[in-house]
Amino acid sequence: MKKFFFGFFITCLTLVSFHTQVEAAPDVMNGGNIFTANCSACHAGGNNVIIPDKTLKKDTLTTNGMNNPDAIIYQVTNGKNAMPAFGGRLADTDIVDVASFVLSQSEKGWD
Image 1 (cartoon, rainbow, N blue to C red):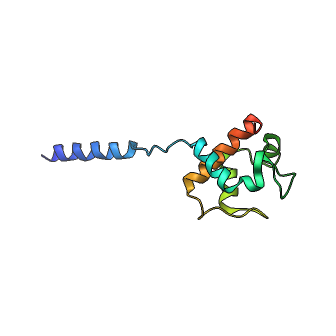
Image 2 (cartoon, one colour):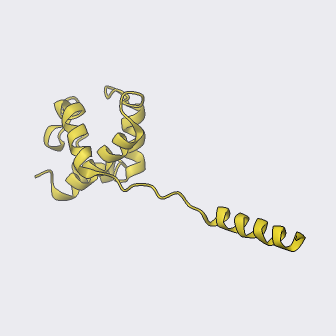
Image 3 (cartoon, one colour):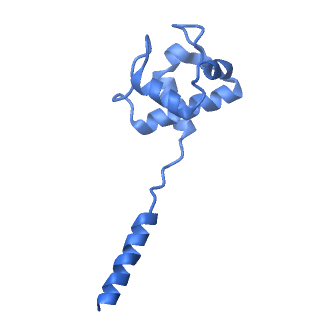
């Protein structure tokens, strides 16, 4: 009986240790909707009406080290200078979706 419980325990432990949470892929369409509702007043077409040199265009994102999801997520969440923080106003998943949208649009040239 001890062997059975020991084997059962090891099996359960193995299953738990190999269990990984699958995260949903970013939803670019939702990101576009969130962007339109919250960001487009200042960033329509990937531009920046407050600081014209800091656009969301691919070359500018690359120059400023903002060409990856983590950097954009951080900026949207915490804000910087004239950009307000959206952490607490937007769900974390919405911020991830916005970052995905911004990067996808920068790749397309914001057409």
